[in-house]
Length: 131
Ligand code: NI
Image: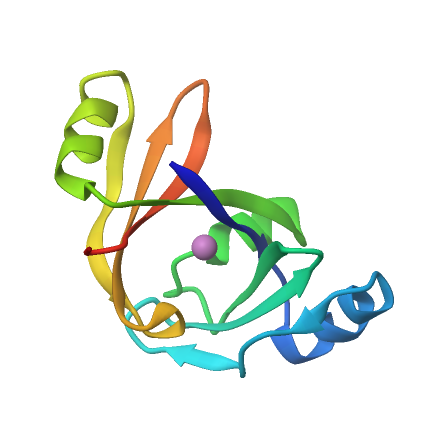
């Protein structure tokens, strides 16, 4: 699978853009509201490397606890696959637990996105390229 982005949980996406600009990143999306996950999202890129800034709205948001417990930090790596069905089965046969089933991601052209967790591998996100 190809790496798509590294996701950072931040307190406020709008406030987090400037420090990344200083590091050489530029915005490659507008700030998108994801109603389902209750977060704001903005993608930024530097030399082909993509980061996703994610800020939870409140305690009902998907990564509220990540921010509350660990502060601003990278918290997932996202991969994209041409064959979600096969990949999902293989991951789950090898210790990865599906923690958030596929759901459209408004910030990624409404592609289906799922999250998996492994006790020794941490949190990953998988984009179903749907091709
Ligand atoms: Ni992500």
